[in-house]
Length: 278
Image (cartoon, rainbow, N blue to C red; front, side, top):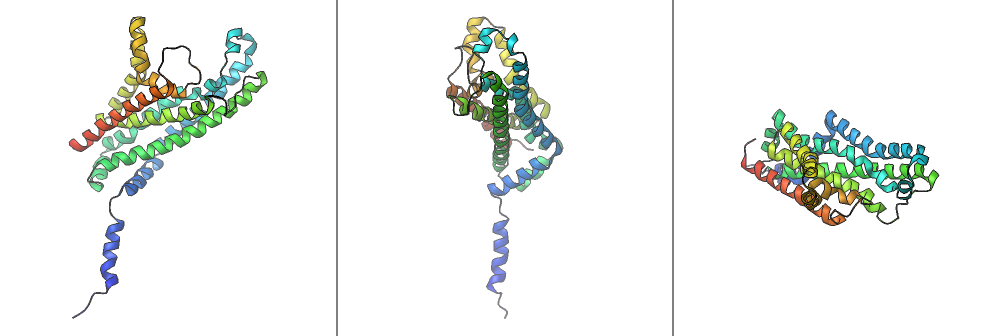
């Protein structure tokens, strides 16, 4: 009678353990998907250029026509707001990419392979959220810092620069990255709910850009009551250094509400993924 060596018995077990589906393994898989897609790299590059380049470009134009600005404009000029102004353009790339992160797999049918590899399904969604949040925050924070220091160097000729330690400056720079990160997560949620690229992008545009336009044509009393709670206005409080008026939520209150919108979208996406076939 032969006896199987203990090492021979343990080897398959160790291989099975290493092959178990764990969240870190799924995260690694999603990271591979994200970084290997050419469209993803181009979209992220566009968002970085927009975030890092728009503020300095605007600042350079403003400084070139400084003497043509009205005295009030020169007196109230805010170089921090100018520096982070690139989020207006970068958010388009981040939002669209957030939708594509999940709807792209539905359009190609690749989502079936992902869900077969991860039968519990939800780790696929969590991994997409983790990877996209980490990449977006890192890139947008770096871009925001680049824009901040570039703008301060440009506006120093007229002595209207700010330091990162000035009140609200660091919060605004980091807030611009936070806003776009949560926006990307919300768009992943929208994509997971609708499972269609065109539908997800349309929902993103409607929530962020169409609703404020509709609110603006309502009677002023109604608009003043509604507009602070709209996703765009609530989310960007954290990326605003100086407000133009008083009709807005407090900085972190507005951002918390925006996070709530994102949480609702993600929750509905999780329910959809669990209940509907790929």
